[in-house]
Image 1 (tube, helix red, strand yellow):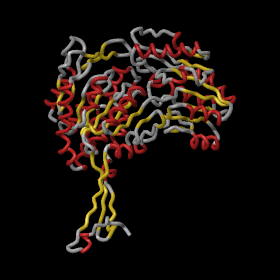
Image 2 (cartoon, one colour; image 1 turned 180 degrees about the vertical axis):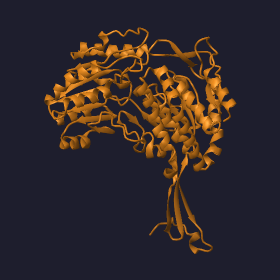
Image 3 (cartoon, one colour; image 1 turned 120 degrees about the vertical axis):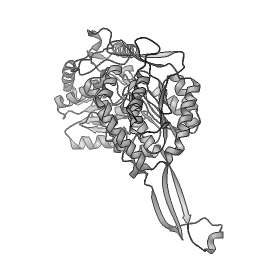
Image 4 (cartoon, helix red, strand yellow; image 1 turned 90 degrees about the vertical axis):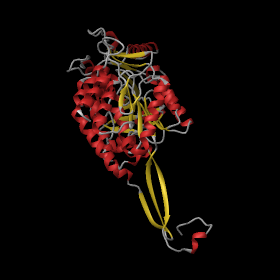
Length: 515
């Protein structure tokens, strides 16, 4: 893309057309930014200051959605026939572009979500890892063959793209989760429509700029802004063949039901209640240090947050270390902060209400973050909170809090702890802290979670392994990225062929068999 063209794209992203002070992000359709004709606009707010950061259409119009779908449909035949080597070369250029733009992308994440510098960079870097995996997709698309599986008959299996795919991204990882979705989808030969969270839309628009600059053709990647009605309208379109979603259980269940009811593939990563089991033989200081980081990093706003601790036997001694570590965290938006604000005033009020419910239902608030007032009064700050003596029937345990709150339960034995963890409806991740190989082996074998950590608080594997949430945390057979992601974004086709000049069996009514 020429410099002048790039400048015009950047101008389309940053233009202020509805207010004098708040920029509006346009939809990205058919390779260019197109201002929406929507009459109502939603304004995202910097959660650390309370200031408006950017606006997007409250909902894109049905006409605009139709144009975006049409652009993706029309781009599909040419893109799907593009040699995989050329698609991969574009992915390499996109990876280089995102790497070079890392600080800028992280800055957009900080501005709209209030993440700390390290967390914002981690958001982009983790997405880059999946983008890098997409650069090697050719080997995953190689297919297989079986010559002469029956007399003079050969069979090959190939994987082909689906068509137009849809991604619905959440607020908590504005760069990472879009990069989970569209690079793998388009490198497999699909075209893509991305619906970012209205709370944090700018990183997606910047990724679209970088994609165009890397050589992604017009219509292959499209971005449509909006909220619930936009999502419902997109899912209803028969041209869309697959839906990727990350977000709340309530919304994700609705998305999955609507998508599959119309014959679409769907992968939906939902809520979580991740547990850490701490055994008496664990080093209390080391365990507490790791749990504090996993519980309060990103202000607890991540599906892999280690929000629940099960203290086994006299492992309760770790509680003092947890409190000490949580109290030492710096809360704010400064460069040296350990955790920032939660995303909206509504999210803050919900977290505070759940903390209050713990008090009312008999739990012990050993560290109350609601008692401290942050000096930046315009932000949605909550200090770390630790709640002890929690029972499974309490709201603070049953609900995914999605804030800086750690709840502690007690168990007499490892078996009791496993029974507790496995009875929870979610199954995203679980960890055990122990110095016993026997305890670790029992835990990893018997715990019903998709991702298991042994002295590792956030057990996320590399992109090659995929994101393996299970139980109520995942709807759909094929998880995100990795080999399962390639399978999700492609379909198999078997080709059975026979090449002979003369064969009397050609008129046979019998199906060819291998014996």
